[in-house]
Amino acid sequence: MRTWQLVTGLFAAGSAFAVAAYAEGDGGHQEWDYGAEHGPEHWAGIDPAFASCGIGLRQSPIDIPDDAAADASGDISISFDYADGAASIVDLGHTLQVNPAPGNRLDIAGASYELLQFHFHTPSENTFDGAHCPLEVHLVHRNAEGRLAVVAVMVDAGEAGVLDGLPRPDQKNVPVPLDALLDPTDLLPAERDFLAFDGSLTTPPRSEGVQWVALREATMATEETLAQIAATIGPNNRPTRPLNGRPFLAGD
Ligand SMILES: [Zn+2]
Image (cartoon, rainbow, N blue to C red; front, side, top):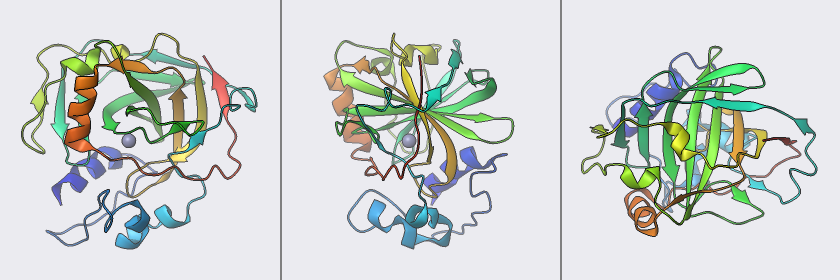
């Protein structure tokens, strides 16, 4: 299943948290999706490599309660160092993914992560006090030790933004170069208050040990673009998972 190989390849290189040894023949395993038969309720049983779907206690996505910032167990600093670069977009079937040029960095409490890709979920996977946004962007980063950090950016309907200018691939698994240089900074809202917490990948194999950073302010895209993306990939949100007492850190 080609989609799976593409996603696994991205997460696997040098990552201690991904299932790098996932061996796959042609059609040798059951495909996962978001439907009734092979959807999130069944992922743990589809393949032994997906076992953490069923047993993990620090799974993503989560509902972020209203009092998460007020009750945060501490502060943490992050800074974005993104810049213009060439990029491409690919329709992986279960999501649209943008692959930027190397060199976009994220610093979390002194640890440096590189932006690998960003992709979309419609509606949002994480929720704030139970409420979904129409779309959530996941900016996936990795540090030198292989730890993954995902920055979650909510997108609401409003004025046009960077997402409105992305090309729409008309074939699956064929990357389409963007016409213009892309600065991932344009995906971020002006106010960058955030909550940080431990979690997992939200697609199989659901590996835990992922550092999550959820920005509280949403960014914007037009209703038309949100509808187009949803029609292409949605719905592709895993239901929220229990917090199980995980603490939040806050920052801005
Ligand atoms: Zn995601």
